[in-house]
Image (cartoon, rainbow over all chains, first blue to last red; front, side, top):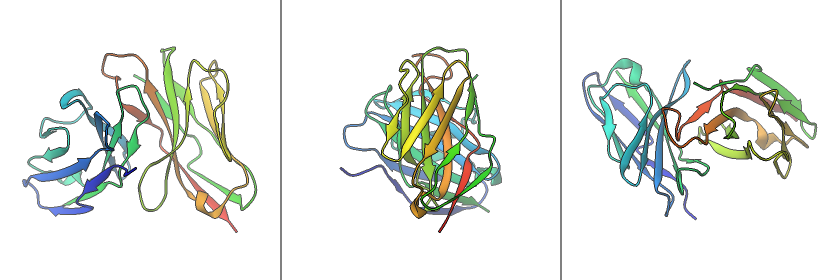
Length: 107
Length: 119
């Protein structure tokens, strides 16, 4: 069974640009979660989508938005530089399985 | 809001020995899930073990076992017969089982413990 995949593995952008982060969940999984792992800040919950609808959002500004699989970060700031991890679960109650992450660098 | 604390930033163990990683959490909820995830240098988070709060029996997965003390809000991970491949950052995580509110669905992570395994 294929795991969660994410693309690209690395992304370099400049301030003010938009970044597109993609995630393919495990086949049959309906819930997709996004987490940010920034240096010194640990792992922070960003967004949760279930069956295509946004169900919950962490303490992040609205410029972090998108649909279930691609996630867009608009008007990038320097502090957005981080590893972005996507996870999926078969339903909202189950264990979350993580992808390899996308490392975003904002210059 | 729930919090998860890992008080050991770094731990080390000799190959084939046993090591215990500590985790405490704070919650007012009675129903929840606890997890240990491993993050090797590749940065991919790998599930190690899961515990449901309503189960009194401690979870085990091969060489990995937990000591779940619900009243003390403690959830430690024991790694037996440590192997070089166990070297990684280990994260303790909490997930609410309450189906609503700002905590619904998300994992709350501790700060992590870096485990070094010496040959």
